[in-house]
Image (cartoon, rainbow, N blue to C red; front, side):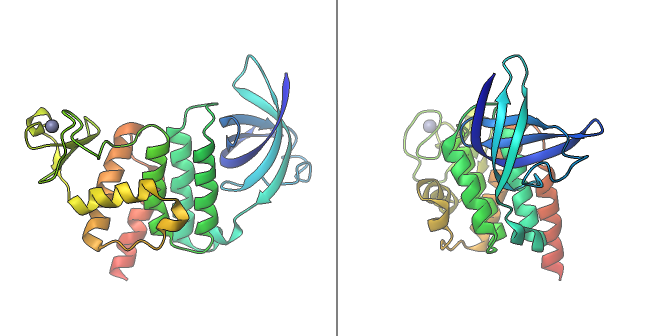
Length: 253
Ligand SMILES: [Zn+2]
């Protein structure tokens, strides 16, 4: 059994038996890791963190060779991002972040860039900008986790797509007019939407926050991103449904 110390974001937690907690973390050094925190429910002060969802901690765990559940012996809070919990849009955005990390990232597969992206997105969320951060997090997560949509050229023949691009979910990218018949379900996409995604992919989240987006492009961007993510997850994002409800309520109020 190896003893490991690493930084970790809490993605989800379940009560386990009478005394323990089963927690899925996204860690800096091992990617997504599941750990058991023994005795935390009978003695809440046993760990120096309440192990709340979204919180950033430093953990020590014993890596078990024959089990995917490791034993967490220490959990110290680094940042609870408490101000996120003060407004619904930020909570909804943080919920999308942890649900996507849990749904998309493979178990115990290190991805330092994704970890840094998640910490940066949660830190920025403490100052608001929930909608923008959600969109940017999705784009950057897809790009860093190997699901990046192919938008530089035609996904089928590689030629440049200057006019009338179409986006194919099934093929994962743009189709030129010649290749368009290869996917009859492909849909039109604005060149501005493609350019916005490429811009966000190439710049870090914090620098992207100043980027203006016209409402038409923002709407299409969300539509394309959500269908792309749902396609890869094989289901709808639960947390996205909350955001959609908030947006409808916001539009009516
Ligand atoms: Zn083509």
